[in-house]
Length: 553
Image (tube, rainbow, N blue to C red):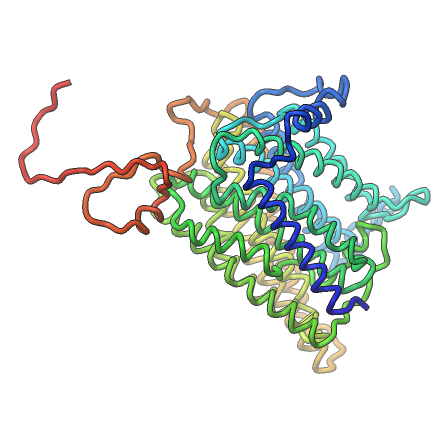
């Protein structure tokens, strides 16, 4: 069993790695000298040989490839999740496919939906948006657009291998999920090098949203280093901790940076508060996010290990419970900052803002439910373990998917140079998705609560009401599949039939404003909160009661 000292050691290594990385970048990333940059570019492009010539290197091509593939994987993930929900109350629904050698269980389909949605849909959306946002904020171009585009297909290949491994973990003696993990790490290494070379060639200072994206991208490397160095990955507690660090690091930090930028771009407003961005950054690094599964079985499967039992001591339980409860600070800071930024939007009909609002509204309630489930699991009580699957799906489909998909839709014109094919289709997709993830999963949660109550009461006969609610939840969640199909068609069609975005109408970031009109007395903190920086020009605007007149041109 992993001891408390090992848990604290793992956390200390993770935090120390993040601090060292921050210092290196803040001091100019001296490790990327001219020689290192040349070698890095050689590895990203020329070392790949003729393969690099298969893709284009135009500006934005890498981000475009990533976001288009992300919505495809979200569609596949929604389909597998729906099938898993349906087979949970009708195990023989796909029995006819057994003649073709395909006879999955509800657990297999649900696990496949989780993996495909998380690694294929959400992760690719965050990485793709990051490839667009980071160069924009740093005043430079992506180091290698061609490598970024090519790696997107490698990453998708890894997701496909993971999909196969979720159905059949061992093929011809090889652990399929381990192969998928290897491809994932290789692709992420290329993305990290690409983004670090981009940071090394920056012309502007690094704003806070860029730090969120950068540290979120590096958090996966810090996580692997920390857990591997302590040997905790072989233990159930260590596997659970690695799962938590991945959620707090890559998913939460990257998601926060992308959503805050997209909120500013979509609304046309500067970020409401930089202080809250800092609270989100520090809180995401130094707390444990409770979203997701209440065990580390996925980590064990991805690395080809036996899943360990989650059995923490009292001191360990106090430590991790405190860190999970403390995660409420960055979550509330992030939600408040994004919602207040969107509040006074000059273009409320912008595609994607509705999805972002949906995710923000659901985030705090789902966080509270996830905190209860995680605390119940680490304490060994397991009194509400029957609700864990539904709450985990809520964290994925009511929070992560709407926020990441909404950011993709908001930034779509900037990335592709075209508008979506149909604004009406985007609105219809939002309402379908909202009904599926809120009403459908709430009905499923109610069904699970009824089953859990009957089990605790010792009632062996199944409840007809629980069965009916489960069926209704599955039917309603099918709307999410339809919504993702419509979103996918809308984005792909937009590449060919969408209205071209001209340079004069292209969406620009409002993360930091260039000028601030001062019409009356105000405080410095209010000026800074509006998005002004050290280089922002304050322009006094005089007020007069005199009647206006025509202006000579």
